[in-house]
Length: 231
Image (cartoon, rainbow, N blue to C red):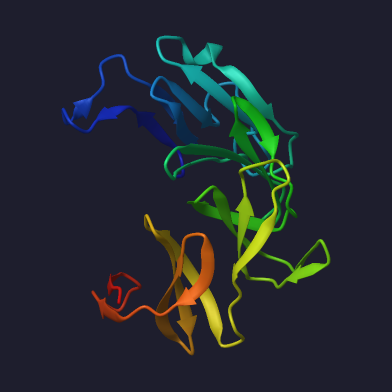
């Protein structure tokens, strides 16, 4: 089963928080909005549920109040997939809602000045994180934006600093490459590629997305986990 109960846990004290947040058993996506507010989408109780058994609404729950009184932030129609909540931190918090219409298409919304703003990019994408005020996404179909083509499978940076949401290509895999995963450091974006069936890490520095060779890569096992030493 995908159902679970979520409880607030104090990492410093090593115990569950007295009178902390508890989301009853259900298929739940949750994220902090701030230290006293939780965003969640869940199937428990009377919350609306899709045909695929996912929650169709997102609510904002204030500490010290009952979960039943949580404010409705967004609700979509049955058959419209699900709405996971995603939280990224890059100097400040970035909170997104993703309304998945099907397996490859979704609409992404950003909380900006306490309001939901739709990120104006094509629906065929998946988001991975924020780097230097830029949302890093992968496109599932070719994009054509302002007379420029972004090939399917590219890693793309979307500027969040204003509502124009200008896009910039970070990387497009070659025919013998496949994207596996992406990680972020304070100064760079690290992409794991499968090249001719061999895992290869490449890095891109903040503000200038130019390929930078990664030096030694010590593999921990036959997985994609690694230590990287930069030149």
